[in-house]
Image (cartoon, rainbow over all chains, first blue to last red; front, side, top):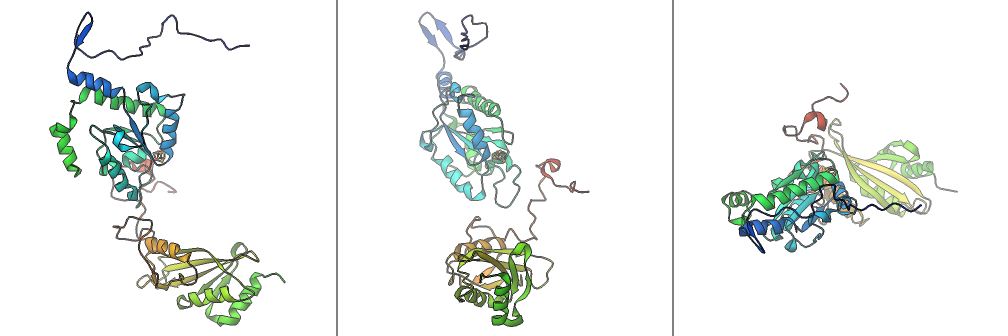
Amino acid sequence: MARPVRFNVHAEADVKLVKEGPEGYMGEGFFTTSLDKVVGLGRSNSMWPLPFATSCCGIEFMATMASTYDFARFGAERVGFSPRQCDLLMVMGTIAKKMGPVLKEVYLQMAEPRWVMAVGACASSGGIFDTYSVLQGIDQIIPVDVYVPGCPPRPEAIIDGFMKVQELVHNRESVRRRNGERYKELMESYGIQ
Amino acid sequence: MPLTNDIIQCKLTERFGDQLTGFEQPYGMLTFVAPKDLNLKVMQFLNDDETLKFRFLTDLTAVHYPDRKGEELAVVYHMHNLEDNIRLRFKVFTDIQQPDVFTATALFSAAGWMERESYDFFGINFVGHPNLKRILNVEEMDYFPLRKEYPLEDQTRIDKDDEMFGRGGHIGN
Ligand code: SF4
């Protein structure tokens, strides 16, 4: 028997493909709003993640990218492997102390604006590896915007974390984050120009 | 006649007399203890002898026994006779105050990597090693992490929940 195909023709579910537009003034054929809102909207829906996957959490990210969880829904299907092109550094997995400088280098190579997400207990705090060889949280070397707890976090949690980043990008940031006083202070505390 | 552990033991005692001690065969693997100054001679003999032919260094590692005063550190050599497929293991013990052991790099190049590793984790000073520096740990590390006086976990931390992370002496009491 053929599988019945169902179409969402009656639109009962509250499906919205596009987020509601930003606040602004709308008339027939035109719409005005402030530039940072438009930029924020654009950025948050086209994040380019850079996966820095070193262990088990990375596997979870692969599931997140695959069709069931479909990360692409959030505008993040373009996973870049060059830090120069990417906006969001996703650190997933145990970072050994020896890896620390490499991670920092990758972060430094990213262009502003850049965001960092620590996925899993290891990236956030060292996790179960409280030992001589493991970095106890990547926030010891680079600033982190969103932490995703779990060992490993489920793909839903990673998506939730990603949506938190989108929220940050969309609503909480000015167009030029790097000019903000707090941001400068933060960078200085990490010794980053 | 196939080579057996007893033949090997006989040959070794013939050559080195009672300098080699502690012969035993856990799980069928011949094991003994050599004085640390003899480590290279024993290895050379095992390698050169026409019947023994232990020409492959499988492993080289170290162990720390804090309770054995004066011989806290052991260096363990595993050797393999590939023709008869027989392995053996021998140990040398050294004082932790002066952990000098002769390097085996002249006999087996494979020892280079493994001796650096043993130095990295146990601080064994392999005398004559061409490049004895840390290999796996970060270079600025200033201690030897697998010595028993260094606890595995940082005992002063409070941000990790002791119940979750197994600290605080809940296991077994
Ligand atoms: S948090 Fe858990 S699952 Fe993730 S990398 Fe660490 S040990 Fe693996």
